[in-house]
Structure formats: structure tokens, C-alpha cells
Length: 203
Image (cartoon, rainbow, N blue to C red; front, side, top):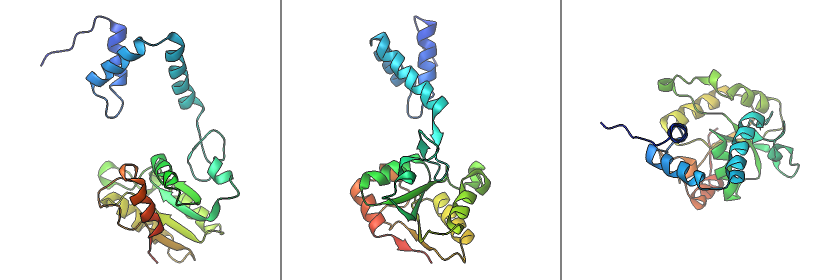
């Protein structure tokens, strides 16, 4: 196996760092780095500054745990949203995907993952207790469990269903217009929108 040779240690380091990103191999990383090298200093510094500020200054909403610039995200702070409906998603990408459908006008709760014994992820590693507390505080009539239709997603749905047993709230899941094993962020907006509109009640 041959080792790639670079004319500059700085170039090699930049390629190595970019190649750590998901879905980016060394060839793609090299192409990106060479592209940036051909841009103006202002352009590259603006990109670098935006990434550093994102990492250092980003906040998470105190209610739903969505990415935000302030302690309360724009969705939770919006009085026009239906705060009696909470849509539970695995991650921020789930919020973005559902918002793009234009079919949901409630608020969200970002778990930060799903229960996965194989990966060592348990309920305590996720924002599950804050969801339970939020629902038990009152004012919530429906919890929509919009998790990826995988084994881990279904395990998490079962856990939430059990934790909210006896709480007077409607639990529903997306209709299976989203195929088993699919991820929400890769599902087209029409299918995802229909899955929300045709959601099925659990209890």
C-alpha cells in the first residue's frame, strides 16, 4: 500500500483534517483543500471564522435542545406555534427535514440520538428525562415520535411509550410511508409530509 506524498506539510495536515469529516475521503479532501487554496484570503478566513464561532458560540435551546443562537430557539419562542404538540426527533437534521415539509406547526424535542445497546447508548445518554418532565408539566396534548424507522428507533419509541404510560397525552408515530430502515433526512419532502399528516396513534 503506497503512502500519498504531498509537497507541503501544511497541505498534508489540511487534507488529513478535512478527511476526518463524514463522507469525505482523502481524494475529496485534497480537492476541497486545493479549492480553498485558490480562494482569496478573506474567503478562507470567513469560512474558518464561521466554523470556530459555530463551535464556540452555538447554544442549545433550554426547552427542545435544538441548535440556537440564544437560550430559547426561534421555534419555541414563536407564539404562533402550537406548543401543545411536541414532535420528538433524533437529531437537529430531523427538525430541518420536518420543517421543510411545511406540514408541522408545533414544537420539537431533540433527543440527541436513540437508544442503542450495541453502541452503548442508554436512556441516560439522551434527552429523554427532559422530554418526560416537559410532557408531565402539562399543556401537551400530543407527542409525535418522528424517529427513524429502525430497530434502535423502535426501541426508543417503546421506551418513551412506557415512560409516558398513564400520562393523559396522545402518542403517535409517523405512518410507514417512510420505509423501514430509511432515515428522515434522506426521505423526500412529499413522503415525509404525508407520513406526518397520516401519523398513527399509539395509545
